[in-house]
Length: 134
Image 1: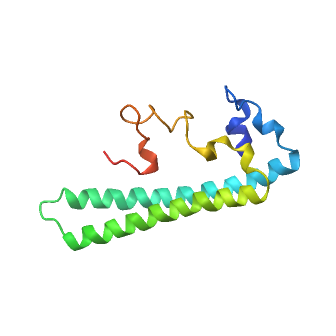
Image 2 (image 1 turned 30 degrees about the horizontal axis):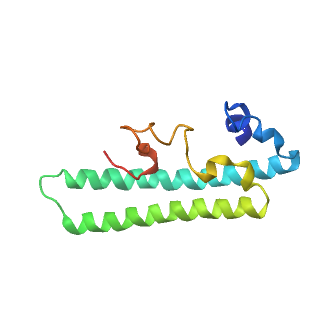
């Protein structure tokens, strides 16, 4: 499925129809860039979830291996850093292709399902960004 089919194409609000404003040739470029980005980001997110789960299991164990906990914290911070780098690289790629202005969510999550008032508790980010652990 192309990104535009699930993205802003049918969104209500001020960005409705933004995908159709992109020339057809650039839509294809945008779809390729976003598909590659999603694949890399999901791989990192799965890895982050795995490491976070392992850390939680260690922290709730009867005997805590502090060295392993500290090593996992370093791993988790490294993965979060890679996720941030991936976001910045995506913005750079889109900017070079003249596509960044068509992607309003790149400026922030806003109210598209991952922003304020959508996570566990008012005014918090959703769990998937790894920023808050519950």
